[in-house]
Image (tube, rainbow, N blue to C red; front, side):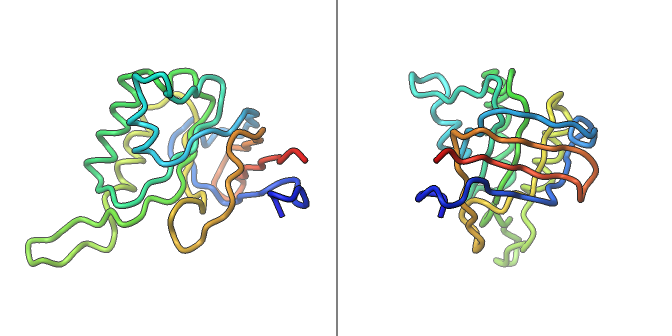
Length: 165
């Protein structure tokens, strides 16, 4: 429906604020850009690097453990790639389970704690819970389109991406 122009917007509700800037009620307008965090991070310093200035950034990842996600976020910060972005919204981060000594894995990865710790250091709003990425629920994410992001207390958060016909 999105590709054929029959669906003019895609709504995402119940996003979780990860820092103080995201808990404050406000509306943010901007173009939504992003995708797989490792792919985006690997383009830093190249002519194909992503431009997040004045935009809303979206990241998702698969198969990366917490310490590696932490390293990617540090690289994004140190390179100033996100310096002038309006907000960051995290989608699915899956298959990053931590191994245990007995050969088992921890079902809950440490990625969630890494994202929260990183978010608390940012001045722009950071939210999570977007059902997009590589998990079982794969909602369409029309990147490169105008987005309306409403921040505030949990339960009042929404991203609305308008798709041009």
